Image (cartoon, rainbow, N blue to C red):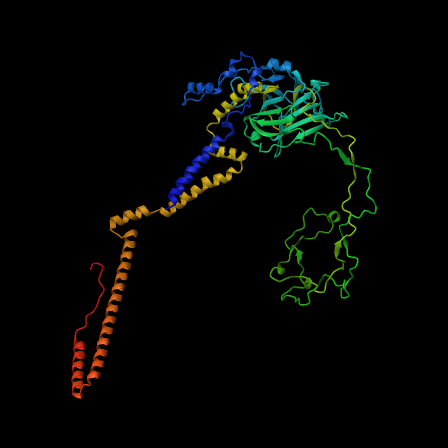
Amino acid sequence: MLIRPTLIIFLLLSVCCLHFVRSTDPDDNDYVTGIKEGDLDDLDDDDDVLKQPIKEEEEEAEGETEPSQPAERPLYVRPKVVGFAHFAEPFDNEDEFKKKWVLSQAKKDGAEEAIAKYDGQWELAESEVNSLQGDLSLVLQSKAKHHAISSKLQRVFDFSGKPLILQYEVKFQNGIECGGAYVKLLTKENLNLSQFHDKTPYTIMFGPDKCGLDYKLHFIFRHKNPKTGEITEKHAKKPTGTIETYFTDKNTHLYQLVLNPDNTFKISVDGYVVNEGNLLEDVTPPVNPPKEIEDDKDEKPKDWDDREKIADPLATKPDDWDESEPEKIVDPDAVKPEGWLDDEPDDVPDPDAVKPTDWDDDMDGEWEAPLISNPKCKSAPGCGEWKPGMIDNPKYKGKWRAPMIDNPNYQGVWKARLIPNPNFFEDLNPYKMMPIGAVGFELWSMTEGILFDNILITDNMATATKWTEDTFNLKLAQEKSSSSAKSVVQAVLDVTNERPWLWAVFIVVVLLPVVLIIAYCCVGGGSKDDAGARKKTDAASPDDKEAVEDSKKSDEEEEEEQDDEDDAEETKDKESKNKKKNKENDESKSKKPSKGNLEAEKTTENDASADEEGAPKVERRRRTRKE
């Protein structure tokens, strides 16, 4: 009886779960802009476009398009920088691109001559699918080649107390096998973009990188030692969540790095924060070295005892300890199995083997047939010389060793003494990095067709937000409309890829109802047809049979009660008769009857008993159900 309501409950949970899958799809959520109060104060008052809600534009676009017809791709509109940006590149004009960007003519050090040149091809082209009409992007076109291209910033970013906001779009149109899609912010000093290569100094490297099953999202900055001038790379900790889908779904993704003057950083993809931390705490190696270090000239004293346990010097070997006994001995009770073939070898020459025709005895030596397993040994317990097996020696004790005890002279593990670090420094503001003068891509990839678009470097979040609304959000909406028919299974896979714990929810609310449905169908199957057949043939249904059985049980119980009552009445009659006889006997004794009277009474009693024996017996029977 509980199957039906339970089934309904789990079906409702299944619907809710699928709705949750759709609602948690990263592609179905609005971009998290992160605008803070006061960010728009730096913008011009004439920028009325900021005051127009994006949702109204989307509703108007939806109203103009008929549901029955596929929506046309919207036309690309060149985005405008609202506010100020140190660098903004939408890659939509080929003439400007050729003037602004410089292809590297350098060679990669340490590489083979055939692949040492940075001769990988770049071009401006539209995305293969889901693109806005006329929207060009920078595309990496060559496979298994070195690529390098760069451009100077409109204004040098000097980390003067404002946040650094870097964002750009990446799309792996053909997926990615092995290669990077990161961007380098090149250090201002000694810039020669035509010789841009892997050793060119950079301040920040940021972006996705993948090879094999290793998915990375780099944030690396080069820190200058204020004391020695040495420059070292500092790597941010790995993202907390999985980032695999950004490499495999073939969609456009927006990568953003925000570096604040208080040394905090935040990394987001499509507006979702995937990594954040502090430059002083969440990078390796740490920015500041330790105040003390071990003295490399310090040596361990010769009398330093670092043995925690030692052999007991007072222990002695027992007199009966025999070290000469072997660990294994021949089994004295072993008996050779019956039928053992002592004269037959385990392997014999193959009688069917034939000497090759090109065999030269002088060159190859005397030919011998290859060996095969002796067929006679298959039916026998064994062949060759029989030897008894080895068993553990009960007398074996091994070499005697004194038991171990705590070392009374134990001094612990020796460590070199600590001395002040001569190279110690304390940089409490690593945000103040080397000024940035250019942006560039220096990449190697085993997959072509990697798309880059809409690079922005600014110090104002509102500027970045407006740029995102005019670029990535429009592109995201177009890709969403093209993939709106994505299957539920694919949606489940996408969501569980980000949140593996959802598999447990799906098992409970999806698979369990299926089991209940099957159980319900199996339990209730055939009942309807059987009932119809009974109605046609007047056969007893299961309910009728149960009623008949219940009535029989009740009749039997009533008859048993009636029999008990009859037995009780008979017992009472016998007791009353016995009382009468006893009373009569008492009276007769008191009256002392004569002999004649006694005989007369006996005669009367005999007659009465004879009458009772001669009277017909009344047979009792059980009443039927009808009676």
